[in-house]
Amino acid sequence: MSAARTPWRLRRAEDLAGLGAREWDLVVVGGGITGAGIAWQAARHGLGTLLLEARDWAGGTSSRSSKLVHGGLRYLPRGEISLVRQVGREREALERLWPHLVRPLPFLIPDYRGRSMPLSLLGAGVWAYDRLTGVPPEHRRRMLRPRDVQVLESGLRRQGLLGGVRYFEARTDDARLVYAVVQAARAAGCTALSRVRVADMRLRDGRGELEAVDVETGQSLGLAARAVVNATGPWVSEVDPEGPRMALGRGCHLVFARESLPLRHAVALPAPDGANTFAVPRHRVTYVGTTDRICEGDPALPDVPDEDVSYLLDLLAYTFPEAHLGPRDLLAVYAGVRPLIAREGSGETRELSRRQEVDVRRDGLISVRGGKLTGFRGMAQEVLDRLRRAGLPVGAAPDDEAPAPMLGDEAFAASHQLRAEALAEIVERHGAKTPELLRYAAERRDGLRPVADGASLTWGEVDWAAEFEEVCHLSDLLIRRTALLWFGGLREPEAVLRPVAERIAPMLGWSPERVDAEVGDCRRQAHLDRLAELRGEGPTFGPR
Image (cartoon, rainbow, N blue to C red; front, side):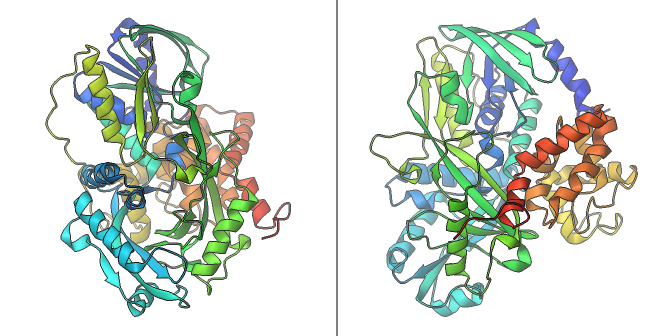
């Protein structure tokens, strides 16, 4: 049986049994994009690396973003030229390394009288952005007259339209990207375990003894490491309170059916407060976000308050006046947090830089603060430089990473009776593994049948995720491995919870009581009760 087809529970048991048998060169705490990227690069450079995540992979910030891999056009007005150049180059690299997950997406910025910077300044900024980030000629900016803008997106507001700019960024599935990086880290020799929490650590000169706990069983595990990296995102200050103060910015998103807001481009919404808010097409849905306010609640599950929903709906009403979108049109809502380095005198999180900072505590703990999804490889390189200076055996840079092989969207469609649209979504999740997944699905009961009318997720992919993709909980599958509850285009997402939970219960050893608990927890994590409130199916949505 190939490593890819080894049931994950068997692999996990073997990994857990060997944790205390060696001193690790590096233990990385935190399995979001930052921690996964550090573990991947450390393993590629020859370090014996252990990656631990207390929840699911991408269980926090890295599964609740705007799903964009962008070059940082918005940082140009702040003068952050090096950041723009860095993340722009990284976007190109990620498109090359994971082409099924990071795909070019055209963006359109309409310019309205009194609502944004002058068109000439906007065009100059995008021109500079193209050259700083190495955009290929076919994707470079186009200046547009009002008539051109209306041809590209006919639903846009015409009153006060001065023109616009068309350029390219990229979209991704953030949680699947994290999981792909974790798999790449494993392929390079890293041991990676989710649902393992670091309960205590004692460090001196970087070298440490750690106590970890298997969250699923309660088993205590003793570990030794030559270096420890704290890459816990919103929780970085809980692990290391001595470093710079953090500010958590909450970003909310609304999801609508694609036919309700049929776009061919991601469209920048002209926010009067200068916030960076977009309407983004993604297969059968269009989602809108983000807001940028201080998060004062649980960073693992930020709320979606009325004021943020109203803010986004008002922007939509102004930009797309004929769409007439309201709370009853919502298919999903979600929110995430951005861990930002606080700065004195900043009253709004959108004023804070998205730069990362790597600091070393007196006992040698290395903490990574801030940063962006797009720039995770740069963060990893900075950590490796610190480890090299600390005397760890960081090897010479290996050959450049090989890109993941691609698979055409049309392949296997006819033989597996899948609609082209559904197959395209499966390919984006699994890339070149799609043929193997489809062969597996064809052997399962109802394996090629969708879990709901119009869904791309099939029962065979549900089984595949439960058997091979480290699904411990229902939310792992329906939010992070497949994003069905947010981007599946389902009018009644609640209806799939129990059937999917009952399908995987025998595979994961769940009792009927556990099924009930998983359904309730997944509903909470996916904000389904909040969705019902907003749509008027529960408590009344507040005034706009």
